[in-house]
Amino acid sequence: MSASISNNDLALKLLLAVVPEATKKLSVSAVADQLSRLDLDGQQAEGTNSVAQLLATKCNSDLAGTTDTEKAEVSQWMTMSARQGQAERSVFAQTINSHLAQRTFLVGNKLSLADVVAFANVHPYMASLSSQKRFAVCNFSRWYDLIQHSLPADALASADIKPIEIDLNAPAPAKKQAPATAKDAKKGSDEAKAGKKEKKEKKQKPAAKPVTIVPSMIDLRVGHIVDVEKHPDADALYVEKIDAGEEELRTVVSGLVRFIPIEQMRNRDVVLVCNLKPATMRGVKSYAMVLCATSTDGETVEFVEPPKGSKPGDRVYFEGFEDGKPEEQLKPKMKVFETIQPGLYTNDTREAGWYDADKKFHKLLVGGTVCTTASVVNGTLK
Image (cartoon, rainbow, N blue to C red; front, side, top):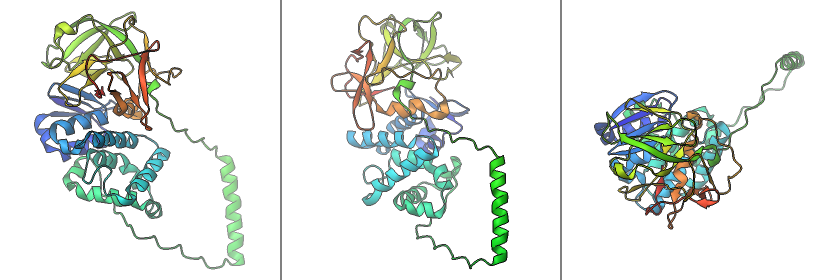
């Protein structure tokens, strides 16, 4: 059982320190420029949110939420907190500020996974704010201060999170300046002219436009498992050869030994996530991920199955995002997959799809026909 934690993944560094039971079970290593990954009790997860949910479920279930509603809310808050960029962070701070007008924690009435992950994700943003700006979102600042004092100091230190002094008193008004003399006015005029000249000489770079993360950025295709064998160095892993409609078969490593017998793996049509960064798993490089559904109790894992008649390489897409173009390769720092993944579910009729922020369900389709599972209803996809 192992965990590979990205160097810039503050949330998972913090969570591992907050849940010491996890470190007793795991061999933890650091990786650069890759999504964080977890292999625990025969289950695998990739990306901050998925790894965090699996860790909490296995090692401290109270953090994950006690009801289905709370679990869904935890997932939603983690997804929102993962969005990058100063503008997105500002919107998230305003959202928390409104949400916490009469609440203490993000979900329920106690500390949850949502608080821990969101706190770590917004730490750099909070550090960048002035006292005036922190006071302008006082509920957000109060929540941040509560979480940083609720977590052990050594846990914060292990995640390289330095405590921030939060002053929730109104900032003092700016002092009025004395009237300028004629000499000061002339000096100011000269300085202004020099400043204007300097600005003209400098070429201002246009501000980078924020990227809106949508599910069509993920390259999903129909794959056919041609061959499969046990991983030579990991009892919980299979190594598959999968036809994705390309010249060469893709090698894919999957943690499905506990859930799917090897004879049920062969000659199966599956849905592949094809543009994740290739990852080496116990010495074998994996070039895609097989999309599976996990039941609410975590005991059943099944393939997401493309409709009959699908062929290797057929495009798999979400309803309403037919015209979107997938990224050639997902950039780990953008956290595309881990932003979308918490909304991936099956519904109560076994149809696979994605719930957006408004809880609208976008079915997962191949040529207009929905992908399904054999039995898992209301299960997560990963």
